[in-house]
Length: 584
Image (tube, rainbow, N blue to C red; front, side):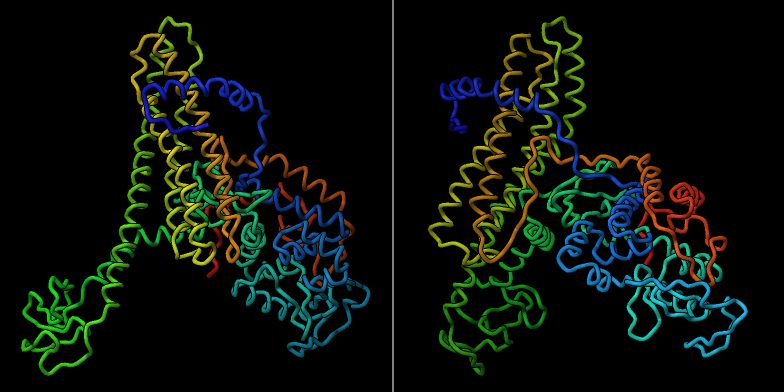
């Protein structure tokens, strides 16, 4: 089907021919069951719940205590599936050793009697056993040395993996012991330690990232399947999950980074100026040569050689300058100037169209209130039409199609240029692919402009027959633009990016319903996760010199009151996740 029409009779056939397909395609989209959102908003309240769910899974599988499960998850960047894969492929011993989890826990309370004394191998002091603490790895040092070690590591930003002080021991220390000892001397530092452990779920997890909104909304987003996607936070901010920039599909992240830098620095203009002009050696202003002689004069009166830029006198001939020699004029400069012109004109072609569609998108975004007023007027009329959802559906389809169209120009600039993909295809193949892409891009552009025209019509003042006609045209164009967007993305993913040999450029997939809105993680899930963790947790061995009575509330151990105590602590000001923790 040819979506591009030139007008008149062909345009009537165009709408009529698509009307039959409209019923099938639109009915499918209307009656298809809604797909559950695969991205979740993690708020201040649900952060601990999300973290505990992953902890619970690892604790159940490997029969581990919570801090050992956390050590494994931090080491493997909170990728539970990867932990399971390493367990199957390499075995439990290798899994634990690489993460710093001791295979055999050394907790023998009777080995150190409180009345006996022991020498600390760090400070070499003879101390009571009650002043000593033994870690799961079996190494025992005095509480003072342990505390100093923990304080230094926390201040260095190593809170998530504080290893044992013993020589060549890479076991990660028990977080409950760290919290207990540090809290006695520096409660604020213990709070910072808890904060780091909590935020590790976001900072070390490639599938969870902070929302880049400004000012920061305090939310994080978790995706389930693919990190190359675009999501919308509950605060309304839409962004690319991979690079945290604005949503820019069908541009890849690398393309968008280069494009924004080019637009910001006007690098092509600078490139043309540098190739077309020379700096005066006296006043350092740009001078453009308007004749064939290589001796030029600046407005400040300084003569200089065009070839090398060196200051000279005024005596010269067509072949040389008196007292100056730097070689004859070369054709390389002319070729360079022509190349700079061509690159600038090419950049301006794509930038002007990108800017035009971006400006149109901004203007059309202001139609929301106008459209609502039109719908109110239509609903107040005595008409057979009662459902006006086609108006808002058409408006949002216009937004999504216009957005995809605007970002398709930066994509084309790099896809068919030499900056990123030089040598990936033959010149003939590249031209063929470019013509195919530009044909689809032009068809989409034509129909987006038609949809914009009908949306902006003052149909609230039209007769009922005219409104029905506009309704059919808008619904028809919605199906067409959606189909064209899908085809353009299919062309990009299959015929262009899919054929690359030397580079990988992933783009966020196209969704007819627009950027996926992340749903909030239920807070009620927290209590369920905590209770499940309690039921599955093995008995917690007791560390020498550390008692449960000394452990602060909300310590993170599954023996404590868990989420409820943490939640109260945050409400009292212990945790404020409006901003990520200060690493300084």
